[in-house]
Length: 395
Image (cartoon, rainbow, N blue to C red; front, side, top):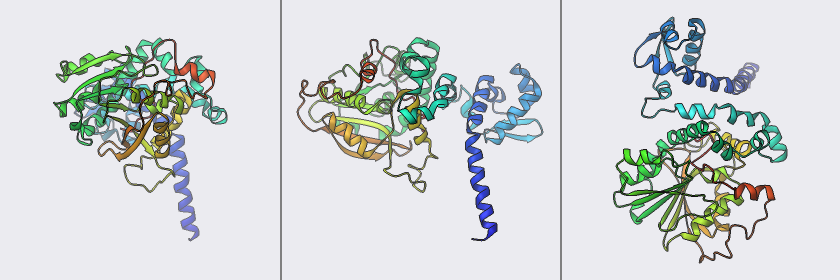
């Protein structure tokens, strides 16, 4: 390698560090764009920055600078000085777009979510959940105490799940089953996608009362009010019986291994003969592979999600071995892991019962070696919102 090659490689490396260091600024640029409604105001035509500023009650010159930053990020296009249109990616910041991600952006640039990240180094040193230490309560209790934030969270999860809801129905043989319960199913978007594609199925959405707040509208919009029912509860205490398939997407990664075992064990206890548990989550490789195919190579987003679990809720992303372990401890055997085409980096993790249910032997506290603090988080005095994920769900 010549000196010129070494210098060129050094520049590339420096550029990488600079882009990563500016990442939080890019996120705040998205947040400002959503709060000022700039994509919605530009619409499907070219508009002058001064006109957008007037409609947004903003100053013209700073608005021009914001729009140019968005153009630099690939979300707008500047045609002539000060004249902008929206790119296909930028259109997702319009709340009226069918695949809008505005609530997703609001939630993952929310100060309450980001504050814990300022203490990532402390969480790495101690394993403590930074959010709990900062706010004096866990994330989901905090949501329950702030209804507007809880509504934003559930809206964000609905937006994040839409791609999976489109890909899942054709990726798994749902025709083998009669009834499916979506555990921690939130507003029902995922289960609605499955039931739409499989008219012979009936279903239940199981979540807390808060998590189910938007579900009736989803079922009504899909014409599923006669085929799908809502059940409010807490999956740390029980899971409703009566289904031969238990589905959960982006639930287990919110929780520690002990808590994940509790959730899975409750599914195992009510699993009908021949039934299945279907987990939809990313599966980390045993070794980080930056040259992997498109399903695994997600620019590190899944690993950032893993750290987000660490600082905000105490959960984690898992490898195949990790999933095998929590399933085994819950009385389940993992029988297959299949990448979910069209919804990278998610995979379908299918598990079956591996031994007869013994409620005494498999009670939620039987082989509990966790701390009193962990046990108090696992069995809270009041139900919490358990809809979907708090990670950075790769869309």
